[in-house]
Amino acid sequence: MNELLQEYALVAEIISGLAIIISLIFVGIQIKRNTKATQASTFQAIAELDINLLLNFGNTKELAQLVSTLRENPDALTEEAQNHGFYLFGAEVRHVENLFLQYENKMLSEKHWLSRKALMDGIVLSGGFGALLKHPFKKYFDGSFIEYGIGQRQKMGIEE
Image (tube, rainbow, N blue to C red; front, side, top):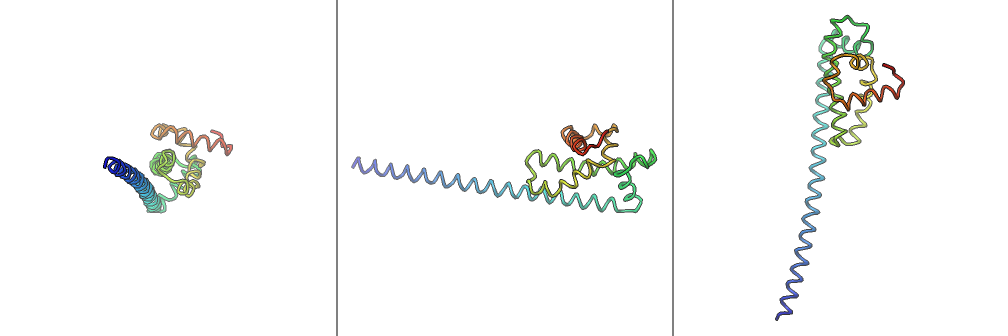
């Protein structure tokens, strides 16, 4: 009788061990699905912000011209127009800074990062970003993002 109880106990241990393994696999699958859902949600929010920025910059031809000129040749603007433009351009820079920080913190997948990297580089390599680096406005952006921008500009031979 004692041997039979030991056999049942052994079978029960094996079954409970298998149950633990199965539950851990299930938890792993759920975590992976949750991570994908979080990344999809993050990317959706980024896409919505892209669209909102574009729509706002295109509200009037004056705003569109101001942002375009600030991005490409900020010295062509009056001081008043530069000040106004920096707030608009600052929103765009804040957006790409968010992309950078999301990627840096592993919240944005490599695929989604690569799909937005051209936008990122277009901003940090622009004349407007160069002007931002000289402007007190710079202090309102994350240091690692500013360092990224400076590094990209140096790689392309853009001197400040």
